[in-house]
Amino acid sequence: MEKRDQWDSRFAFILAAIGSAIGLGNIWRFPYICYANGGGAFLVAWLVALFTAGIPLMILELGLGHKTEGSASEAFRKVNRKFEWFGWVAILVGFFIVCYYAVIMSYCFSFVYHSLTLAWGDDPTGFFYQQTLGLTESPLDIGGVKGYIFLGLLLSWIAIFFSIWKGAKTVGKVVYATVLIPWFLLLIFVVRGVTLPGAVEGLTFYLTPDFQKLLSHQVWLAAYTQVFFSLSVGFGIMIAYSSFLPRKTDIVNNAFLISMANCATSFVAGFAVFGALGYYAVKVGKPVAEVVASGPGLAFVTYPHIISNLPFWQPLFGVLFFLMLLTLGIDSAFSLAEAAAAGVMDKWKRSHRTTNIAVCSIALIIGIIFTTGAGLHWLDILDNFMNKFGLSIVCLGECILIGWVFGSGKIKEYVNGISEFKIGVWWDILIRFFVPVVLGVLILAELLERIKGSYMGYPRLAEFLGGWMMVLLLPIFGIILMLVKRRD
Image (cartoon, rainbow, N blue to C red):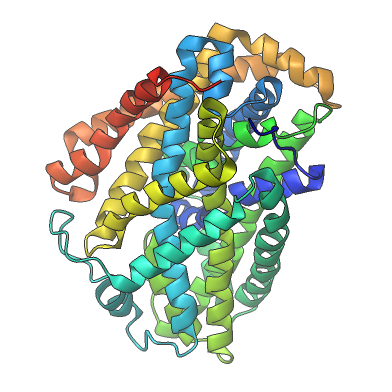
């Protein structure tokens, strides 16, 4: 059995945790979700979600991982042997997400190259959806595998594999580049975005609240799931990462630092994105609302439009933008893979090399479906269900199992014993009462919405295969992994 890893320094852990939290979602996911859910009103819901659920759950996961010195599956097994399956569910949510997340990194590889010649020309929409993806009309029309997308996926997994080659030891070194470089590049784009002519139009659109939106459960569900997704809670990542920390570690301080750094990055990234959108909207004579594309389209359709219309150095800004997305993506991707690898190593005592090869290879094979003509459809369906149901249910389950069964007081006592800033009864109330009630209501409301109609009008069969079935498989796979004999 290999000796359990430890971080080289607290700074390396902080960078790794922040790197996991800060990812592609800060650039293409957060700004669009903010726009689609009421602009400034969403920011209100998002901040409420951060302080009432995000930070409390970050403290819970860091405390649980540090106390048990185990991955998510191992940590919940130590809480109660019957709960090991739940830890595997958390790991599996993250694992399924990284299977398609790596494909988005593949898009980034492709667009770094395309930026050199502005290959999308005057039609970034057609270039991305037709030429690059060969997008089919329906998820049930699979189409063929796109060779260059698969090649990018393979490169992504090679990069992920070598980033987690020796667990915390290599991650702790890689993050110095993959966290600090995108921060530097983001600052360049913020300065450039807010100084473009017409930027104020985009920023007004970004920050102007539509408080009527706060009456919709979907806005609140979007806010809470974005916080969970962005902070990387509910995936088993923070549990695994904190298990590599030295015994004397300020858990509460680290939780606040990681959470605030991540959310500040999301907020600041909004200025870069919407400043540029305002410029582009004025340039083409349209309202900002009509130039915002959804999901990956924001990064791979709208932004190429903006890059092509910049007054100078378009190829340079294109390369820098997609390089920023790539470096942002790899941190989140290898942290999700490392959470799975840690679970395997804890249970079956395999070497880093063997475990990482197995995890990366399985994820690469699963990811092939997302490199087909229907890939973006399946990506969209799986992303929606893994976040709104899989991730939300894991966070709800953590609150119930730790708050009520194990006892939130035990975690509070433990983290207070090693932290300078002490958490009080407010934390117990949020973990035991507030978060479970809010998430329970939001999950039920979303369930009723899906009963009324399929997600985005996709065929019910595709919604079942890519959404409901994957959510239902989580506990089944979790129980199977729990029942497989351990290797001590």
